[in-house]
Image (cartoon, rainbow, N blue to C red):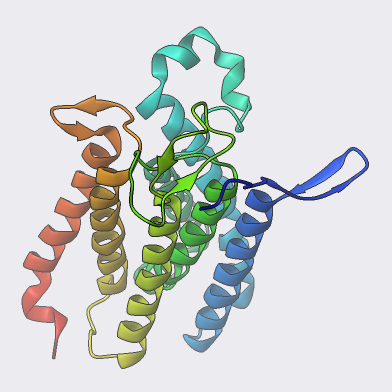
Length: 255
């Protein structure tokens, strides 16, 4: 049992280094190195890789915050619009982040005229690393907690509004799944058997949002509609899109 989760890694005077910020930075750096390496290997411009990463960071963060505001607590933020700027209140939405990343990618591609299909597959390889690191940060922040349970590995989250209850460490489940998805994508990418452009992108989309859908069954209830959480409803369109793409492209996938 863990009951002393501290969100702060190090304090120096008035300054504090938080686990969340550290893990986010580590995830972005690792993903950036992967994207840069694959851009160079695929005869794409290294400078474009670094610029694209910056666009994705800003687009992803803006989309993640707006997703939290619009999908989960629109009434609250309509009444308190200034709180939209306070990311520590309410947090970020992974579904909103995905939309923000897509918009940032499309805008950057419009400016630079990349080989967008090849570039999108490369970017998709780095995304699970960032997602897994973010969930580790969520764990140390005692946020996005799991439902109450009596499993042997249940954890108390001291910063949660009801800290005494034992819960699923759902953030760790998501983190492990995200890193596992990266390994799957990397192995598929290295095999070179799947030759259709955007295969990696849609495989990421299917694996990540399918895992998100099922993890929601052990996460604390959020907005519940029709027996499903908001996170599950938001995952369904991505899953349907990915499955539809695989069905449409099935005769071209494997040579």
